[in-house]
Image (cartoon, rainbow, N blue to C red; front, side, top):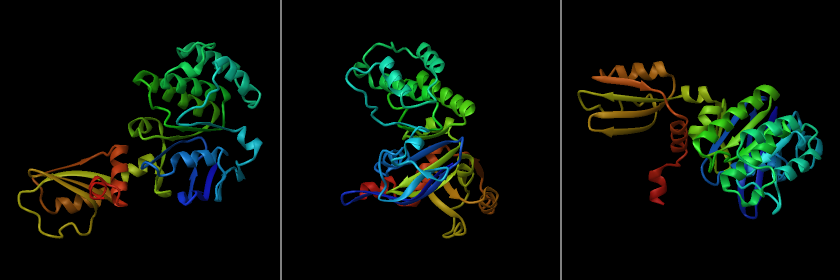
Length: 300
């Protein structure tokens, strides 16, 4: 199990993470989402042992990953901009990682080379951004790590390759009980593959939940009322936002679905429908609740 305990990280006078804590269940696919500059990439580097936190710790089974070779053998991190030496090829990268990871699976590497359209002897640095990400992921999957950290892994990939990568990630989780943490702004892709999500903003945790639980806690309701609603009729509801288009009102509301439906039905709507939320809508609703929305950004 991965535990993030009261992590604080500063760069000069800027605080990237502040007293951040949460737990990532073993064998899960955890989606790390947040606003730009919220500290997602910094957190992944701390978990993988690249950065030392200024306070707190990232622990795997109770042991810190920083400056711990045994723990680092269990982790693999692909950054937003994967780094390769000028002359790196798939063959040379495979030879390199074999020396550091005893879990290297040569048969898996050869299988991945037959799946992805990358020649093993071509220089990776000359490839497109998307192809470089594929090369990095091929090596990562061949390592068979217990903890795999991916930063914007879907960026620059075409739809077919994105689906392939999601399938390969799920196979790794199933076969190897790997815990995968994916930081991404592409919430549609995360929704397909993640079972847990963590939302961070300004270096702190806003929400950390099972994905289905997060969706159940926020509801979108569309309703049409015959008459104008009186002031304060929904004061007992935790309404995040209300949008009106003609006579149609769209509410985003936190709380119990049955209680919300009962309160709105009490106003005798002509039409009412409870609609499921996407992960993107959950993200927007939670961020609006902490003051990060379009209106506040434009007002600055």
